[in-house]
Image (cartoon, rainbow, N blue to C red; front, side, top):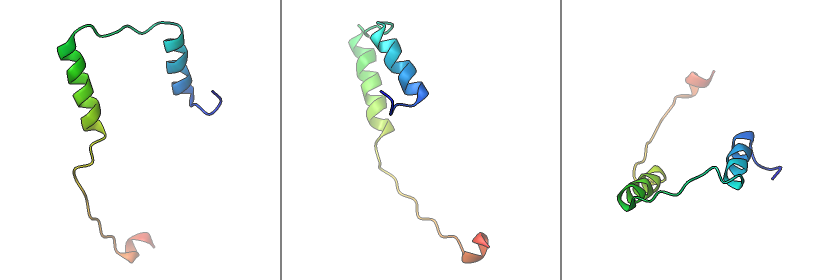
Length: 56
């Protein structure tokens, strides 16, 4: 557990203390699952050019 950030340690401790509740609503659960999938979807790219003088 030492390799976790303070925020991650708080989340883990909260979970282990049974402070979390299940989502009983299937529609809401499916919505959260879709939001999570969309969060990590990489469907766009950006090309960026910066001149050397911008770094000097």
